[in-house]
Length: 274
Image (cartoon, rainbow, N blue to C red; front, side, top):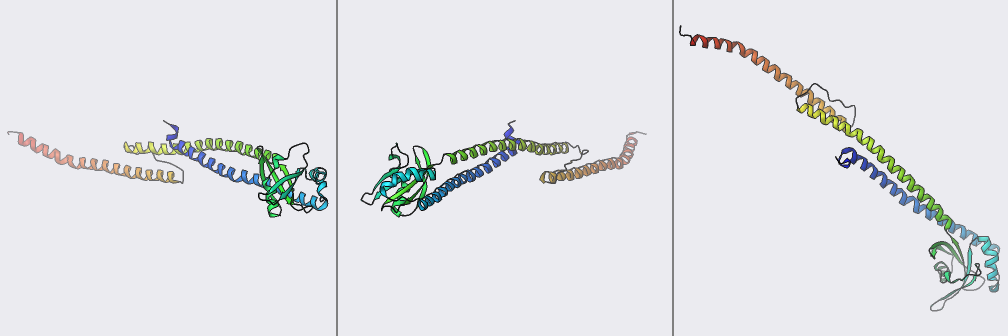
């Protein structure tokens, strides 16, 4: 017999599906929200740090922006600092002017969406971008040193993603263990439940065969226990009817025996020629 066709197998499978669904919901709620909270925390840290640097050590002139980005802002923020020049032509011209990562091309941050948003709105902007397959948390802020200048702080989200990966891996491991345990526990409990149903089936077969001497016993208080007590009441009534039938047959046989003997005697006399 296929185990999944039995009551125990179906109950165990149902328990596994319930646990799997619950763990899936927990994963879909916890992991993305935890990742977003880490990203928001990094953005808030960059925001506060950038405001502090701009307040304590603001750039003084255009020709000092490269030194300010490389020697002041980047070490204080522990992130890449890029200063853009924004000209509102049609189309707008948006080019990197200073970059704390010297010796590398600034083309990867050309037309950075966070910096463009800060320049167009002339207010602080924050968000995440992906460059070369790597995510970055970025905060951009318009500078007062020259009209159209925007400073961008870009920090990789490597540590946050590693933390999320660890949490995701542990959720998967815990989920696998929980599913395995639920499958084992469900099969054991379902087997015990199935054994109770099997006892009721055997009791029904005994009653159908006319054997009313063995009681139907189940100590449970659930629906199976109620069904067992209904079987027991049926057994008692059938046993009473069976005893009544036997007594009726015995009484009828006794009451009919005497007239039958008398009738047999008369028949013998009638059969005698004398």
